[in-house]
Image (cartoon, rainbow, N blue to C red; front, side, top):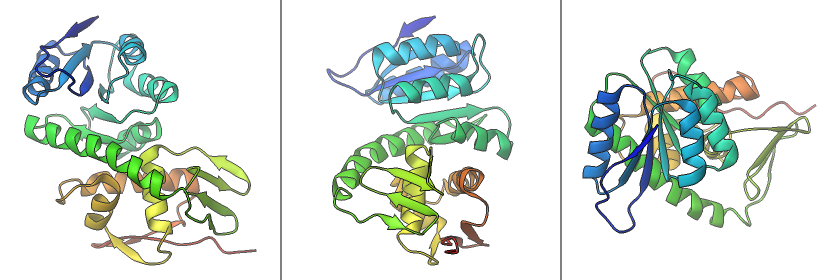
Length: 241
């Protein structure tokens, strides 16, 4: 089931809200509309996939627990069809849930209950990041391949291979890995990573960095990114054989 929130601008951002709790879905849609964006609401995963294909939204807010098709499967199908930033909503403050969600293709997460102010701040950060990513991609066209032997990162084509096999990363995971790999063994603070990868100007999303690092470790191996407790992370190049 779909419905449309009031359009306040001629060409506003379009945000697809996927939430099966009517009260919460309406509240999110109203807050999005207040920002001058257009909100569309889907109440189940299958409808969300169909809506994303038709609307081509600028951003998707996706609840994990949904009828018909869960949010993780819906996220996988949406980002496979067309790259779009996805912010997942979860009722459980479980790190495993967040890592699974990020692995499905989501770019960020929020745990219920949350403030609408924080939700909009996250949305704005993701939308800014999309625009910034276009600039970074343009600037990376002539960037040299980062060759660490068994691990190769191609910034221009945004491809990562390990032992000759391509590793499928989300756009955010790729940007995070490339940012760390450009300065091997150098410690980057969580705040610096938030600024470089997410274009955030405050430290409110440091746990987002932690979850994305865990997702990367799941795909690349735990030894590739070193934790410096209380500070941040460092990329550790794999040993050359």
